[in-house]
Amino acid sequence: MTTVSTWTRNRWTVPGVSGLLVLASFVAQRFGGATVGDVLMVAAAVVAGAPVVVKAVRAALVRVVSIDLLVSVAAIGAVLVGNYWEAAAVTFLFAVGHALETATLDRTRSALAELVALAPDVAVVLRDGEQEEVPTRDVRTGETVLVKNGAKVPVDGVVVGGSGALDEASITGESMPVEKADGDQVFAGTVAVSGFLQVRATGVGSDTTLARIIHRVEEAQDAKARTQAFMDRFAAWYTPGTIVLAVVVGLLTGDVVLALTLLVIGCPGALVISIPVSIVAGIGRGARDGVLIKGGEHLETSARISAVALDKTGTLTEGRPSLTDVVALAPGVTQDEVLAVAARAEAGSEHPLARAVLDAARRAGLAVPGLPSSTEPVPGKGIVATVDGARIVVGNLALLAAEGVDGAAAHLVVDELAAAGRTPMVVARDGVVLGVVGVADRVRADAAEMVRRLHTAGVRNVVMLTGDQQRVADAVAAQVGINEVRAGLLPEGKLEAVAALQRDGYVVAMVGDGVNDAPALATADVGIAMGAGTGVALETADIALMRDDLLMIPQAVSLARRTVRTMRQNIVVALVTVATLLAGVLVGGVTMAVGMLVHEASVLIVIANAVRLLRRPREARAARLTHVKDLADARS
Figure 1 (cartoon, rainbow, N blue to C red):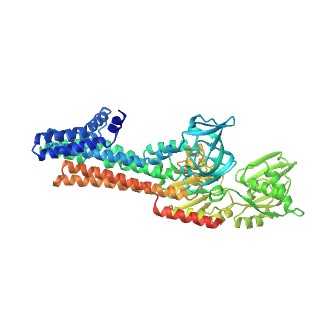
Figure 2 (tube, rainbow, N blue to C red; figure 1 turned 90 degrees about the horizontal axis):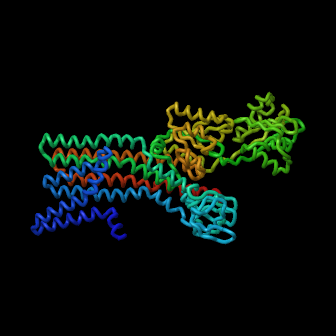
Figure 3 (cartoon, helix red, strand yellow; figure 1 turned 45 degrees about the vertical axis):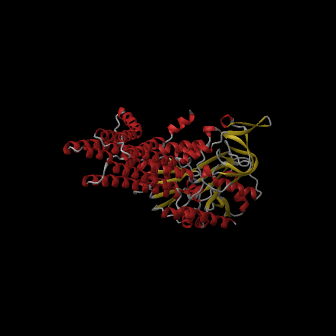
């Protein structure tokens, strides 16, 4: 019984049975059984056409004039006028085309199916000192899960014991295994390729990064692009218009077959499917590479990106600044004293530059006892703290001026450090400048390559937005080839800078971490979050990059442009097909069966063209391999 049910649900059953009946009809007619042949031909039309009629009726009940209705009217009309072969051919070809279309569309959605298949069904947890295999959904947050070599990680969590390597390609798109040890984060759906890990579960079931990715891809593939919405409105008028045209032609010419043929060649099948199949394939390709695009509308906008705005610290640089210079300026003050005073003030700050000062003080063996009695961070300028009753200022010259401190003695040193690409911070105590400390953040190895690829992809302007000083920003920009620098910006200044680029006519993409740059990300035409392992970034960013890899930015732009280019190609194929068939009918030579054959061929061409998006471009593969080799050589 199960076998019969499976057979009847198979997408090839209907066209297979219909095709056999058509063959049987030809055989019967060959041996003189004309009536039997006609009956078999009608049976073939009924087998292939019944599902089409059912769908047409269902659509009509909700006031939708569908393509199925055109085919149904044409097939029934052909039977009524005695053109049994035409009726069977149209319905059989339509059924074959539908089966091929379904099979190919399933492939375009394979990225989502592959993601769902990654989630393991069972997990091995440690309970009362014993290993216990349980369904993954029964794992509780905080429990210790064991991950052995070759197994899939069932939960999001943190390594609390053991070591090993994980293949994280399913989450980040990165093919190289990543070594994991105590304190490292792991994701559900990744695969252990060596070692043994004990993982404390922090996210289970729908609260894992994998589940959020699946949800996001699922929503994105169903979200319509602007062009697709236009095509839907167009089809809603086009299909009834085709019926009216066929009726008018039939009445004027008295040629029923011509009217029925017009119905068949007017089917907008390729046009209707041209955009959604491209969107699904493009978003699927992105998901496989760790590029999560929110939907068709965002994909179309990303294809028009002409300016990319990036933060400096943590995006173009590694985000791990270190102390490079300590200059004492006040008479009798040593470098250690300057550093110690700066460290005491920064002890109450969470700014990345504060960590660099504190680490340097610790390495120098300088004591940093306790916290300041008060700490007042000044966004974009520095910090003011009270330490042992003294007012300490650590920051730029603008902060000193605001505090009424004469910073003339520090100007020369500040200029020299800034020209070298380092961030100078003047240290003053009770209104007297003690010295200057310099901090530098190493520029990422792939920053220059990222800028070059953005230009190659067609981005006209790459802009750095930073709260750092102009000369520091200029030095970094010169290293990586940035076109434009906007320095000394407060958080609201970055938002205004993005808005200014838009007023200049740019379609702007803002790259940030999804949280700190939220206002600028929201203002930009496309918000791109890097290293988006968090639920916030996955939900808010228009494009979420699952790896902290700068080269994924031009990769995302190129993918969007390839997808939109494919959409346009498909629309042209669909329109040219209808126009050619219409001309063929008017000049003669195109029958109903030929019209349906050409239509189904155009549908398959459109789908096949979209499926090409699932392949990574050859030049991208070659460039990535070369880049990985270059990085490996540089590290060795």
